[in-house]
Image (tube, rainbow, N blue to C red; front, side):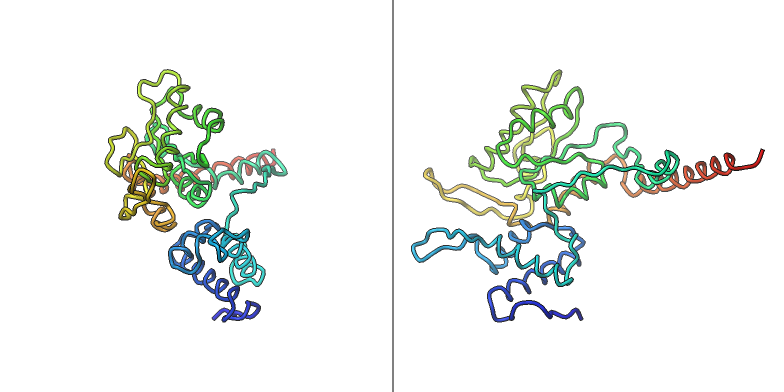
Length: 303
């Protein structure tokens, strides 16, 4: 059993949170949902009642210190002690750009063979996955890569990103769009969702029916299916000036459920099982390695 030496005392606030984070990360490992990120750890710990959404003073005002900061400190301690690997937790807010290269063009091609993929969508463009939150896109990127699906996050009311990055993917094609975000009937969450198709409908040239991000798994008809938190969770309600309304947050769902939901939707859309395509991929990689090896032997053979 892994020693917990180095953690704060188990009867302290910091020690309890460190151990709760460790238990949750081990649960993610068992469920196959590694890597994860701090935002989903926050969601899940809040759902378990281990932390609150915010710290408040005696007057009910939010304190400057947040539970998310305490989770960050707790997971940093776990990684520094070697109790969990550093790469188990992603940080979508920071990016490092590197470039591939090799000693020769031949070696570059050989090293690229394991990365080569073949079309699994029958010649049609893979669905575009649009997430409301960067944290959601971050944990689902691994699955999107398996299915060759482009994925992005709008981070709420996004305009420029939609026009500059998303619209070109939707121009002159019938690419389907999946949307993953909070569900709040006639509330801010639905307004965020509604904001996304507006620029695409104005700026996608030649589109008879622009992609819609409606709730294909809810009740509203939509050309494109959507992965919605409310597909697997009962409605809650949020009260506004106009009265209560149905509301579902991704924080109520959890990473494992979201991953299963996305896989289920993508599997249903594929023209054939992904496993069949992956078998063909590996066969073609093997053949290509053989061809490259033969070329090398021919080049080196004495004349």
